[in-house]
Length: 229
Image 1 (cartoon, one colour):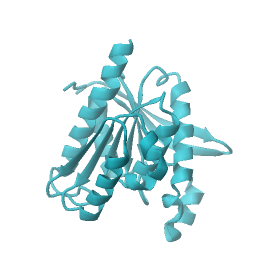
Image 2 (cartoon, helix red, strand yellow):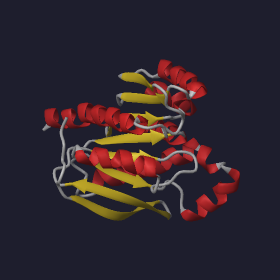
Image 3 (cartoon, one colour):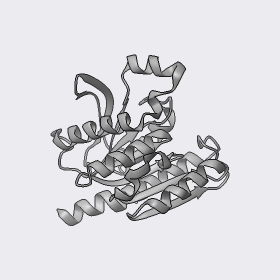
Image 4 (cartoon, one colour):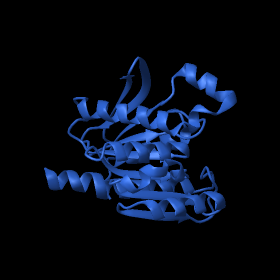
C-alpha cells in the first residue's frame, strides 16, 4: 500500500467545456501523481458529496489524482430536483463523462496518467457506458452501490477491469449487480460489504469501500502505467 501522508495536494477548481456548457469540478493533484480517478456522482448527488470526498481523500493519499465534477449544470440540477429525470438519463451523463475524460487526456497535468472511473448509483452506469466508448483511455472502474444494470447493451463492450461494491443489506441492488456482472466480459469482481446499506453510512463501511477502490486502482492504473513506462 503506497501512502502519500504529509505530502502537498494541489487543489484546483476547474471549468471543463462540454459543447456549449461548462461543468465545474474539483481537481486534486498529489505531488507524484500515478493515475487520475474521475468521479461520476449518483442520483441527486454532486461534487460536494461527503462520501465521495472521503473516498477521494484516501485515493489522494495513494498518489492518485481525483476529479470530482458535476455532470449537470446548476440550471439542470434545479430542473432535475423535483423530477429526477436527468439523473437517470444515462446517455446524457455518459456523454458528459466522455467529454470530461477527453479533457483529462489533454490537460497538461493529467494527460500522461491512466484514467479510472469511480461511479456511484446511476453514475456507475454512466461510467460503464463511457468506458465502452473510450477503451484506450479508461484503465479501471469502481462502482459503489451502483446501478450497472442501467448500462444495458454497453456492458459486454467494457474492456476496463471493473470492481462492483455493494452493501450486504442493499438486497435489491445486490441482485442488479449480479445480473450486470454476468454481462461483463472484462476482468471483473463483485464485493459485498457485510452490514452496509445503500449509502454505506454504517461505521467503517465507507472506509472499506475506499480501501477496496484504492487497491483496485493501484493494481490496474499505476501498475499498468509502470509497465508502459
